[in-house]
Image 1 (cartoon, one colour):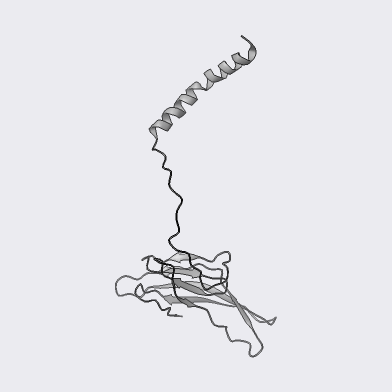
Image 2 (tube, one colour):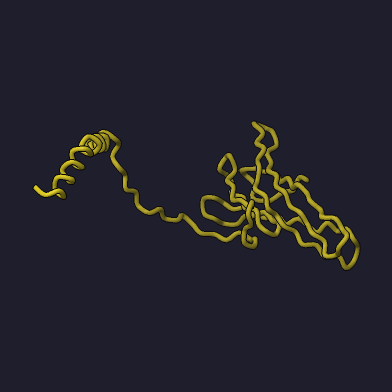
Amino acid sequence: MSAAPLALAALAAALSPFLAHSASAAQRGPPLLHLSRPEPRWISSANSPPARIGNSVSISPDDAWLYVTGDDGGLTKLDPRNGDVVGGYSPPDPGAGGEGVEWVTYCESGVEFHMDGEGGESFLVYWAFSLPSQSGMEVVSRVVAIRHDPEVEDVEVLW
C-alpha cells in the first residue's frame, strides 16, 4: 500500500471517535426548525427625518403605543397594530437670543417609560437639544415628558 492511502487511513482512524461523537450528539439534540421568512405586518413612516445613533423605536410596556424618536427632536406615536401615525410632538424653539437667532433641534435619545399602577400617571421621557445659529450662545437641552395613556391617541406634554 502506498503512503497516501495509509495516511488517510490513519487520519480516519484518529478522527473516528470525534466523528462518531458529533453524529450521536446531533441525533440527540433538538430537531432543527426551518422557519419561513417573516412577513411584515405593516410598513409605516414616522414624521421625522432619518434616525441618528441613539434614536429609538420603543413599544410601551403595556403594548398600547409605539413611540419613535427622530433626528429633529420630534416624537412620533404610532398604533402598533397597523402602523398608523396617531400623534406627534416637536419641541418648540427655545426662544432665547431674540430676533435673528435660529435654532436647530436634535435628538439622539431613546424613550424611557414610567408606568404607574392603577390610578397613577404613566409617562415617558426623552431628551432633545437645540443649537443656536449665533456663536457664543449656549446649547439648550431639555428632557421632555409625555403622558402615556393606552386609551388616548393625543400626545400631551407634561413638561
